Length: 313
Ligand code: NCD
Image (cartoon, rainbow, N blue to C red; front, top):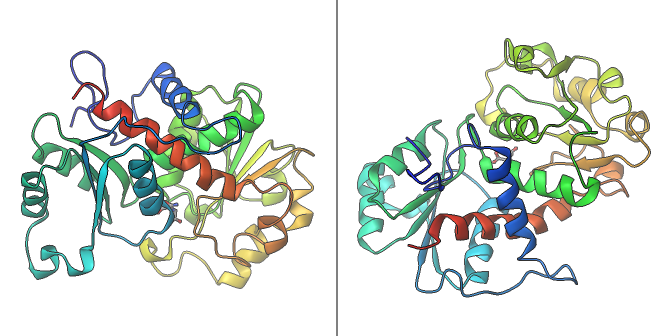
């Protein structure tokens, strides 16, 4: 599914794969417009008379709610379909569900699904002028999470080219990591490090120019940014890890390990966190953590994406 139109404008946001640095920068700059000088989110009329439909076939708190708030801040009519009680639960196909919602004059779908490729499929079904945002498809992509992470890093660290960024945890099953690696490369980050047990690193990933570490103590040395990831147990075959206790012993972000990074390191996490597994509470709630700022900035970034996809329609 081509996500650009023939004039090079985004029709859908399905993946960050293939998006240029200037395209990403444009979205980040647009997000700035939605945060005022007191760090409060603005209220605008950009999506007045538009209908945004959230269709989440997988659990979500942050992503679904922040999309909903973003749409409301832009004055859209927004509904979130309760998938547990939706007709798909009675056997209706995904295509029919989407076509019915489209018949109710949806202008923009925000979709999450456990199948990789679901958002692309939905984008193929909708008529021209209707936009689709991928809010996470299987292990594949989560473009707005990666964008809000870029936004958070840029606000705090100002630029990307001098940064060493470590992504730690279940890279193999993480759509966040996949989108993030892509986005950080596009932005020209100096060094991207992946830290994980061998069983949770995608094969041949080093060929993309990232550095892989199986020892936390090595990978965290002098890092400017640490992005922690949850173990995606729902996507994991058994036997990849001995135990959660063992995982925490080797890969949990403790205060001791944090001290190996730069003094002004920031700690990020897309949520939900498993405290005591991949991250200790003293770190998650400590002065280096920007985890709740990510959530706040995520609204502005999602506003920017929605405006970009609906502009002039
Ligand atoms: C992530 C997701 O759903 O991919 N969470 C999120 O969107 N904030 C990461 C995760 O579930 O671990």
